[in-house]
Figure 1: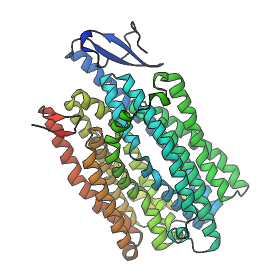
Figure 2 (figure 1 turned 60 degrees about the vertical axis):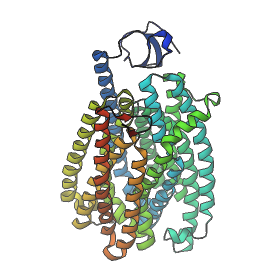
Figure 3 (figure 1 turned 90 degrees about the horizontal axis):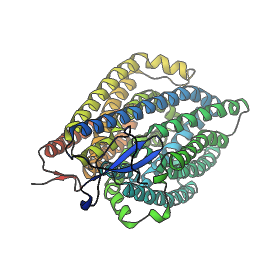
Figure 4 (figure 1 turned 135 degrees about the vertical axis):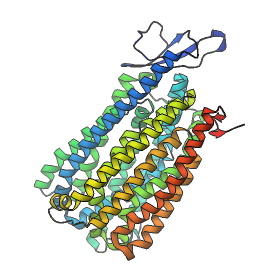
Length: 498
């Protein structure tokens, strides 16, 4: 909606108007949604640039703060969930559940890069003040997600009937094989439904309002914990456990979506009439290469449990997954800090604000190094006893594995910070190349090293893969920023020009 006379507490952002008006369109982020007004202003107004930068930093900080709160709640819940899960399922069945969850999560590549692609194009349109383009991109992405969710659900249900599935997951007896098939089908249906709800979290992130999605995850995690306690008391089934762990978050995301598009941003509510081929092409221009990047990332994030189950058996999975979960807290915390800057980088590059991009990118990198360095050292000292107490003695971890996990996690977090910068600058082809290279080195190295080194082979392979990533990604991104500062960077093609 276009409305004049809005109060001045909104943040004025430069936009796009017919040249006859000699003005610019202003995008305002108010408490009740997106509004636009026409305002006559000089393009080079330094005060307005300062306000834009201030809002950009403030929204990123709010999103990061909510993400950290969500992360803290999630891991506090996990501290209670892991021992309850082990008591209910036992080590072998819990290991099978972890392995199936990792296998199903690999279906995230069916996202086809739409999530980061949508964040990028909507944030760039926000920087231009183009409200109609934002709504068309969101609507087109929602329709694409609906189609992909159906395909993904069908594919995972068919996978549950595949004869080689039990062997892939190390389920050697008939009971485990039956449960493996059931888990893949049920987890697949839940994951497909969650992928459809992803347009909500993506739209929140694109508008630098990712804190709404964080609140949904907090509510869902707490709901799972509340339902799990009586389930353990009543000795519930593996199917009931899967539903308790999956449904609350899905319900919370649907509720946030209804609020976000129904009340806060009705001007962006998806509709079939707003879908068009041009928006799909724009999305795919970013999403195509990002699909390959996601394939590499998902391979690293979720292949370890499957590889360990296959090479060493399902009972070995918790021996790695639970120690890594402690380092995963640090990695996830680093992600919550740096990921809100993806839409900020995209919006700032659309404005040509390269100085701000450089400062924030280096700040994010140093924060990541400090967090993972100090946190990893603390876990290396306290980890063995913490894990023993946490699992009631069912999982025992040596310092060798913890040291390897500390190095692996630090380099992984640095890679994520660099990846956010690459995608935010639409350097998606390089991001895809690096991610696929890392995934290939990681999987091949883990497969070869697991029989020889045991569980420590997985983080050793990860260290080698992410050292390669760091040597390529950061110098490439900084070269692009220097090109932008020199005025030889074209954002629409994401390349340097003479």
